[in-house]
Image 1: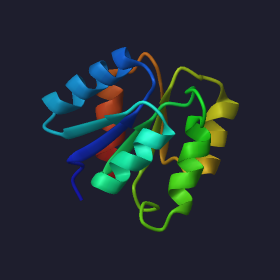
Image 2: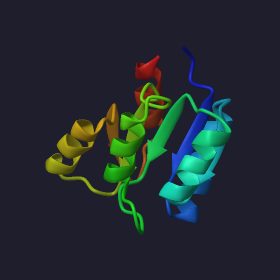
Image 3: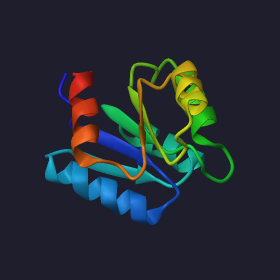
Image 4: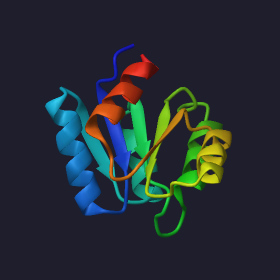
Length: 121
């Protein structure tokens, strides 16, 4: 299944703009959310083909949100790629244990992100 619709969850407007621009240039439709509440609202409006998830956010963090999404039968099949500045191996392992399909560190390398998205197909 091709990835056409992407939800980006990040509390940084700069990151949202950078990632949105990058994905839109690759022909994807992008929706954004700045926190867990917005993310669930966006999920309810339209189910994405992929979620790019930041870890460090106020309130519910990306690990917790990934776990919640994966436990919801409506969205458990949506792949999540963690996209974060947390670059420790323990963070990557924890993300995968919460249900993330992949993990990429910031600053995001556009070619690496594109390759990870293509690997999901």
